[in-house]
View 1 (spheres, rainbow, N blue to C red):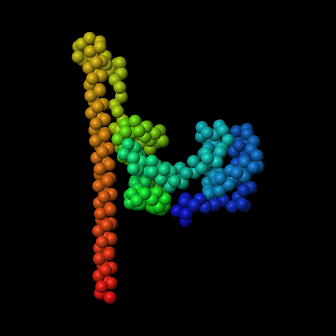
View 2 (cartoon, rainbow, N blue to C red):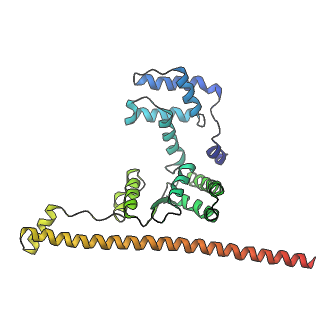
Amino acid sequence: MERKAIQSKVIIMKSIDFNEFADVWTGAWELVGRNITSRAVMAAFELLGEFEIVDIKRALAIHAKSKQGREPPKPADIADILAVRTHNGHPGPDEAWGILVKFVGNEAETGVLTEEIRRGWEACSGILDLGDEVGARRCFLEVYTAALAEARQHGRPPQWTVSLGTCPNTRKARIEEAVRLGRLKDTDAAGYLPPPKPTAALADLTRRALGGPPDQGAKSLQNHMGGLRALSERLRTDQAAAERRRREAALQAEREAAERLREELHALTAEAAFEN
């Protein structure tokens, strides 16, 4: 039931819930001094029909207490709140698939993925290799939804890990986005980003330590930091390439194991047919 509700967006609220929904929705608008038409209320009811009325009321309370509460609620605001509460911080199935397809097959792209996304990826990788994106998506959603239900059952929050791509600019953008979304801590992200540029104060300290003229410390520090940045970039690129090779080797091993299994089944089938 959980899997079906997520994928096909089963309507949960019934027509008998409309009056209660209209009261709380209109009240939320009146709370910030705004009016809303009955047509807009009906549209909001239909858009949020996949959620329980009790959950919508709780989400409206959360919205009212947040910074967004200065403005009247929109269906997208409430859906976002409910998505976080429903999935315990995990991305929903459609969002998870979007995260994956942006990363898979593009060596330049950096992926920030959960363990559940990786499980879905492992399951659908062979189908993706065949170019069947529709079938791969169907397979991914099924496996990911099951993994998501398991995580929710055990109260397990998402654990985000990074698979580095080869493009430094994309890598920086994806890591900074993950920090902004709360998926990575600043301390974790620092290991994937270039070191900061030297400040004037740090340059002055270097100059004093070296006992040279004012610009000598700055130049020495800049040269040193430049070398560190180049080394760091080379190490990250090597790490990204190694990660890609590891994934490709794992996928190749899975394909070879599947091929051996097919051959064994074919041999057993032929043997059985011969004996009969």
